[in-house]
Image (tube, rainbow, N blue to C red; front, side, top):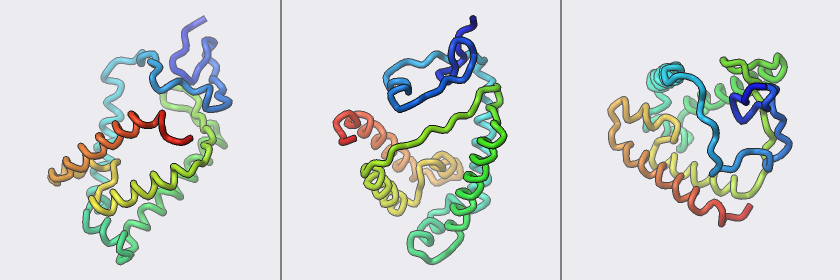
Length: 174
């Protein structure tokens, strides 16, 4: 009997079935380290860099484009976001229909999320921050890489906000 390669597998190598959030690992629980070599993760860096280049070329990172979106002056960003939603929906459908696996052969699993009002508050805070800074957390590194070094303030603020949430998350209403 081999040891599981990830938290998504049992000791027999079969995919684990998570029935509820209580079956998920605790945030403080240490997960077993990846068994691959460090250079096996280079592919993710390459894809991330290519994604950043596409964002720059599509003007998705432009502060002016983001401001135009929030002022309802231009359709550009809504078109990009709408296209991303459609591509994601089709991708999830294809993954489920054809039971597509990860590159290392593990089954991809989707878990239902329970709605709570904190998602509304979090979404509003996220949207206000995005509108004020002109930066979504995802492409912050690409914005810094293209020379907008002032975005470093936004990056540090995002990290601080994540830390504050992590510190107080036990005390927040569920």
